[in-house]
Each structure stands twice: as C-alpha cells, then as structure tokens.
Length: 324
Image (cartoon, rainbow, N blue to C red; front, top):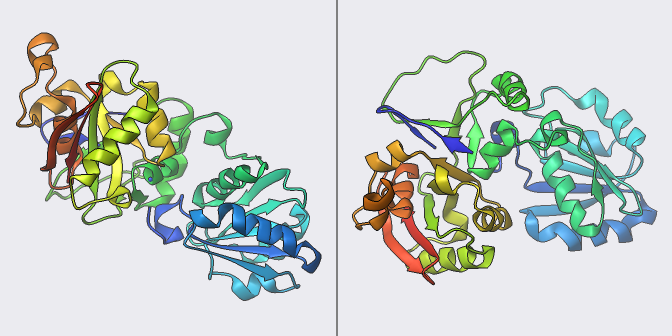
C-alpha cells in the first residue's frame, strides 16, 4: 500500500470493540453440542493464544440469544443451518453484532456466515492452523485484495464512519481506492459518504521505519526490528505498523516479516520522506535523491512525527528507526 501526500497531507490493523474497528475479534465463544466438547477444547488449545479470551459454551436452544453481545465472535461447532436459524433474528447492525463462524466436527471447513470484515474472516484464518480451509466469501478477500477494514486492522487503526466502507471497498475491487492519506490537524474536515475515516487505536504507539538492500530475508528484518525495539522502552505490542519507501514496498522479505507479526506496511513517496528527513546522513540522497528511508519513514508515520530511536544498521542489510 502506497501513500501520497502534499504540504498538508502526508501518507500513512487493533482495539477490542467490534463496533469501532471492524476487523477485530478478541473475545471468542465456541458453541458446541455436548458430544463435541473434545473438539471444542482442541480448538481452544490450537488458537487460544491468539485471543484475549476464548470460552466454550454448550449448545442449547437459546444459547446465542443468552450470550449475544458478550463476545466479539461466536464459533459454531455445528451445521451452518443451525447457527443461521438461531442467530438471524438477533442481527441488527454489522458494526455492533458479533461475528459468526461455523466449523464442522472434522475441522475441515471454517465458514464465516456473518461479520466477515468484522472478525469472522480473522477467526476463520486462525482456524486454518488446525487444518480447516477458510471459506471466505466477502468480495475483497475472494478477489485476493485487502479491504479497508483489513487495512485498518493491519495499521492498528479503526474505522470511524462504518457506512462509508461499502463505497470504499467497491473502489478496492476496482483498483480505484488509491493510497491511505494522512491528514495532520488541528483541522476541520468535510468528507463525503464515500470517504472512510480511519483513526489510530493507540495514544502512544510507535512506528517501525525500515529500509533494506534488495533481497534481504524475512529473518533479517525480524531480527533487526527486535534489536531496535530492545533499544527502546517499547515492545512488539506497541507497534502500530511498519513504514518504508515506495521503492521498497514490494520487498518480499519485508512483507513476509510484517505479515508474520500481523503488521501492516505503509509506503511513503520520495517527497514525503524528503519533508521528514532524519538526522543521520545518507549516501542514497546524493546517489539517487532519496533520504535515509528508515528515519524519514519512522518520522512521517509517527503520531508526533519524532524519533524514539535513530537509525540502526543490522548486518549491513536492514536499517531500522523507531518513530512515534
């Protein structure tokens, strides 16, 4: 994902409340018949570490109604028809309703049936760790593209105006959305119904700014980022996203490393990076007209646009700076 800016706009996936950020599910309930409790516990063991809490509820006729609103996502260990009939009358608003996924007893298929962009797709993907095939039917995922809710989760942001995502996700499908733009205030902004507004989840999160030589491996990025964070008071949970330059946004190692950590990658253009140049001199500016990527992207991406850690070079392959 690239980000373009001008003097007042510069370019830029996790909070718990399902009615604000779209993509997140943190509190899960597995609903299972008594004879399937062993399978339910297998699911807990397999994906439990990925969630704040995961409970097992024994199925009875009113179980969904009884616990409606207490969980971000229900995983029905049952036929999809049962889950659909028992929850259809409870559904009111996709931004407030819990997500629902069904999975068969053999753990073959994980099927989001409601709330795909609001936690169900996320849970279905996690159930793939147990061998299940995520059967996702939301248009952006079916087309292999990243919808705006998924972008928000990856960048640790949340969607402010949920109704806008119908238009913006259609633009994603048509390759017309363009980059996510950052607007610095204080400002008053008038937007249309087809503009999705994203807001940071953290008040004190940090951004990993990173550059590299071509072909750097995933492991090198991961080790470099870990080493850099160890030089600060922050850790992985404080990272909002990884920032880099548009000329580095297709580096496989970088993308694979960010994906392994569940982080989004925001790519800044040359003009933005020049406007946020860091203190460490860089030969690349003399050679190709780009400032040092790690510091400039960390500054550009940070809420306060300041460095926590200046450029660190790792194995002469990856450079890292931390911004906030």
